Length: 490
Image 1 (cartoon, rainbow, N blue to C red):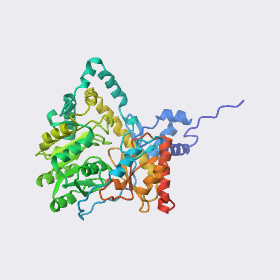
Image 2 (image 1 turned 90 degrees about the vertical axis):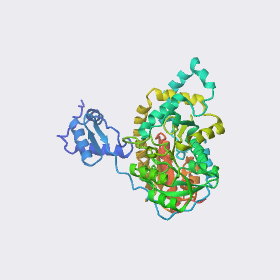
Image 3 (image 1 turned 45 degrees about the vertical axis):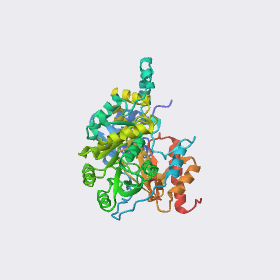
Image 4 (image 1 turned 135 degrees about the vertical axis):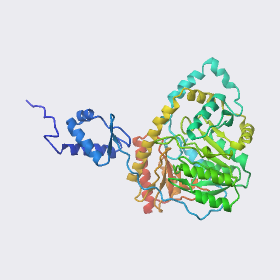
């Protein structure tokens, strides 16, 4: 009669813990556990692997010594955040650019069209998948608002400046960004894009020069293009954002009418300016009497630590026009944003009224109800950690599958990556070839009025990590390698 094999112990097999440690390490490398994830308890893993608790403990300690795991008191062992691959080389230069006309609209519309195509792996648009959004909480709020005594209010305009309860909630939450507007200082808009366009219209005229970061979000470029204004691109660093020195030189040389900056986790770099740089920009622009339009749409999505301050926190003269929205945090489809316009606020409110009367009433009421229930901060804590893991997972896949020499940013907030490929890899060619394989990406030239960044792409990490997505990243890497070797032609 067969007998059960004896349970292995660290005493009987002193080197067994090394095998266990290697198994755990392979699971981490395969993405089963991501940076910040808690590993199974000693007892749980002991039962799973049929080894002693002492053996698992030795394995965990070995991985701790190797810098792979970190213990947390009364909590267990966690995957330690690893140093990410080298970031894209800084593109800062003191050689001042010249103003230019924007002409990226056609390519941008192709990117947006791809988001509607069935079967396409959506790595291009910086839009969070519904998997990451608080849809269940919104549904509860919607059921409440559908009750007869509430639904009757949906049929009225919420004329500018917008829903009172929503503006009170936004004003209250602005404390975390370092400034204290009143509800009267807030105007509700149709997303952040309308806030930006209204702000530009209130400040500048056709032909005026608008300074922007480079690279910058293509929606900002299109807004400037639609208003027949010119763009002056100011170099930005992948870590620290816009070059204050280059901006100062540009202000001396060109008649800049306004400046548009996304200081916290900007799109596409993910850069976050430090507090000293934000203060310096606010002071510099005030000195030159040049208004700043601040796009803070990603400000709530710091991966770790407190929310960064807005440049608006250093504004003493109403020179900063602050724009944001809930599109990256709660729901893109609700299209609710806002602007606090400083000394331009009354004009912006009037332009909003002329443009479309009001933002949809039910959407404003739903968001006001959601924010009032006090669940938003808990959701943000969870999603920030989730996006940090998503960025780590996508970065790991890029290192694994893309050509040798590929460089990626190291964002500490948001959910997008900016990737610099070897010079043989043309981003526009890769965009077209990838589309043929049902993979949507955002090519680098889209983020510059001068069509720079020919070897860069932006990828969205806010999509569920499935075998199909991992396969798409692997295929994208192979396509890039094909371009590098010259085996793809179009």
